[in-house]
Amino acid sequence: MLPRLRSGTVHVGGVSLDNHLILAAGILGTTGASLARMLENGAGGVVTKSIGPYPCEGHTGPCVVEVDGGVLNAMGLPNPSRDFADELPLLEGKPVIASIYGGSAEEFSTVAGWFAEKVVAVELNLSCPHAAGYGASLGADPRLVGECTRAVSSLGIPVWVKLTPNVTDIAACGLAAERGGASAIVAINTVKAMRISPELRRPVLGNRFGGLSGKAIFPIAVRCVYDLYEACTVPIIGCGGIATARDVLEMMMAGAAAVEIGTGVKDNPRIFRDIGADLYSADGIPADELVGCAHD
Image 1 (cartoon, one colour):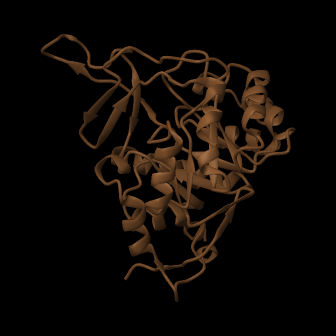
Image 2 (image 1 turned 120 degrees about the vertical axis):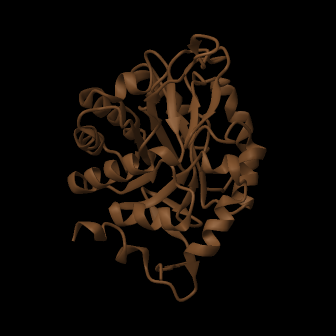
């Protein structure tokens, strides 16, 4: 029989959450109303769509294609930039984390400053694999990870750093984030991928290349969380292919203190409530008893 966790408020990465289940960036995070709906449907916290220093329309379509075991996307970080702040009053007092990106430490700091007093934390997108000059372009270099983290942590707000799996040594990037003052590390973002249409003789995505999310990347995410837990002391938040309470428990045993769920929402908008029903009970065990137990 699978263990059940004790229900109640969760404290992780400088943030108080209603439970361990967080909406991942980029999924129903474009409006305050959609974020509020996910909280009402059982999410313990929500992460916004990634917001950058300038408005961006994103890549030309097709931008999202379903594939076996997951979803291939190349959105290109579309966002309204600073104007996104207009969506946040509806969520005042709620556990909202702003996902932000920039092309330099200075840009990260600027964008973080826009939202520092409007959200409970910021999540640095140092991991998007399909936006030239942003995301993984910076996040693959531990030195730049440290610089960007340091620039934002100096503002005094909790900083979560979302890492890319598309590196040789994710632990080195995690350690750089920790040294830069990260309050938590989020792992992972999507895996570099592409598909080609034999009928059209061309890539299926408008951007040619994209990132794979969904169940197919869950084992990759578990390994990354495991490696980060071995190397780092700050909390790890697991992300990638989580769809069931069993997945949450496995991710916790690898070292995750909480999890983010993204693609799973596509097939089940009630996924947070459904997982919570299977994961929690009033007489459950403390999560601390499970986090990292696979390392013993």
